[in-house]
Each structure stands twice: as C-alpha cells, then as structure tokens.
Amino acid sequence: MSRACSPGSHTSDEISIRPYEAADRAAVRRVCFLTGFMGEPVGWMWRDQESFSDIFTGYWTDREPEHALVAERYGVVVGYLLGCTDSRRVWNAGKLLMRHGFARGVAFRPGTSRMFWRMISDGIGDAIGHRLPPPTYYDERWPAHLHIDLLPVCRHRGVGTALVGRWLESLRQAQVPGCHLQTMAENTRAIAFFEKMGFSRFGTPDAAPGFRTRTGERMGVQLMVQPLRPATLGAHIADPTHVADLNGVDG
Image 1 (cartoon, rainbow, N blue to C red):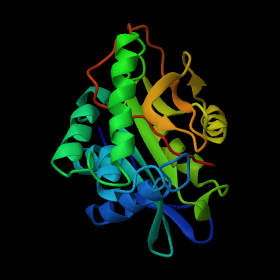
Image 2: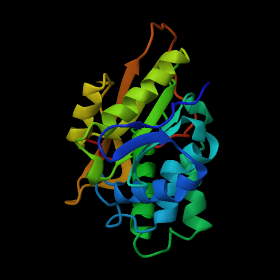
Image 3: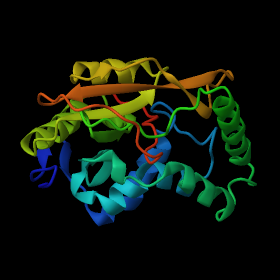
Image 4: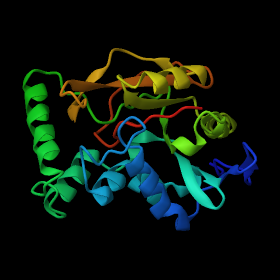
C-alpha cells in the first residue's frame, strides 16, 4: 500500500499535517500520554509514560510508520493519527502489558501497580463470567483501524477531520474494504466526532479490564466501524493484538 499521506497540507494558519517521521517518535509518545484518558492526561491513573505510550503507539510508529500522520504547530507535534491496514499484524497487547509489568517493573511501582493488578483481577473475573472481550476485534469487512489523539491546542479546528479524512481516502485508494476503531463508551465527544466522520457503533460496549472513571465506575469500550466499499466476507475475532483507542478527539 502507498503512503497514507501526501505531502504536508495546512488546516489553519499555523497547523499543518504531514507524514510521520522517525524523529517524531518521542513527540507522539508525549501526546499519547497527555491525552491518554479521553483526551486528558493519563498520569493520575498510570504514571509511567514509557510503558503506556509503548502499548498505545509502539507498533504503529515502529512497524507501520508509512501509515502515520502528524499535526504540527510551529514545528511542534500536537496531534497524530496512527493507522494499520490489517489488524492481525499488530503486537499482542497482553504480552506487551506483561513485559512492561515485570521487565520494566510497572507491576510493582507506585502509580502503576494498582491499575496493573486491577486489570489482571478484572480480566480473570470477566473470563470466568464469559464477559472478557479480546483486545483486538478483527473482521474482514473492516480490517484496518486507526488511533487518533490531539492536544487541546488543535481541537475544534478541523485537524481531526483532516487526519481521519486523509486516512480513509488512502484506504479507499488501496481498496481496503473498511476501517474500525475502539473508543471509551463514556467518551461521548469522541463517539459523536467519529459518527460525523462516517463511523457507526457496532454492538454494545465491552467492559475494559482495569479502567475506571475518576469516581470509580468500570468503563467500557465501544467498537465503531465504517465500510469503505461493498464486502460480504464473514467476521471473526483475531488473536489479542490491538488495544482500544482510549483518547478523546474533537475535529
């Protein structure tokens, strides 16, 4: 597939969109951490930026950089879209979590250990109750997926619309039949934005192991899909390789 991006374009006087470059990796990880809880900083829930950002951006920047876009303001990356054309290729999120949990030690650190073990506990309980969803949804009708995150400085300025529009157009040109994403069910602003971009909610939200609102309620993950050309292939679930897009975005 060709690059997801054409040369840089402008969405406002000072914000431009361009293809991701290797030098953007640290900036993308920073944006991920600063928007990791429905568009807000995730540090109150998970303090280790390296592990959080690796789980949510590592595969996409390191294995499919040709399908990534960044939004830049005065030379600083303020948003991104990370794409994948076949979700079966993505790294196993459960294995990544275990690696960071024990090799990096987040299972035992203040600021991460509580959520780490809550994820394990929720997962065991959900599995016993036959409620545990796979971290990756794979369906041949919409095999591609995306993650998008924007800092507040570039929201409500058409940046999200431009990023998603360019990604979907690249999928159409490559004859990819459809695209999906996952976002928190509580993130009504993000859901409304994605609906504006042509996505539809698919099924009911699944519980997200470990994730809680600030007041302690369990959170859910909403799958959203968009067919890009007619397809009649059947659906099935892939191995757990793709984590939900937890973050907020306003076009």
